[in-house]
Length: 225
Image (cartoon, rainbow, N blue to C red):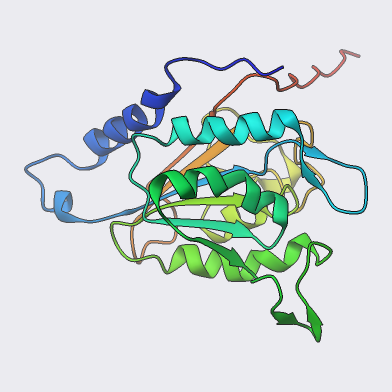
């Protein structure tokens, strides 16, 4: 069973206020810049039994929590990868904010001679999603639900550097440890990655990783030799 904090609804708003205060002093010209905010989440918990993945009871509960988490954030765009379970993750948020969900690549479209379905490679979303998020108009606030196989690669294409030499990323650092799913925490579903991007700038102005619910497993500490 998941356990959720009552104060989550204020968390993202507080983060945005802190970042704005640090980056955009009121009397400076840069205060007029309309940056782009991007929130990325992984799909919530899924039933791994064939033929098609679907959200579990815990996954549906976590998806509902996203509605409260983003209640005080006025989104302008909502994206999901082509899989049905990433779409299901943000459907309640989209309904609450009266926004369409843009899936990339679009289910049913033709990719490499075949229609896009849940069986299409999770890596197929990397290029179109990164392009869509990079090209968002100034002032946009977007939420994207993705898969473990593509999150780090998309973050990298949005300007988050890759850690050198396969190293891990320390807390608070701006990096991703890999660009595939070999280092992704497969049993964790509660991360939110936040980027503040300025049009024309390669590296994000800010990069923060948050959590929005309990139920995750703490990584085991390496054994001392």
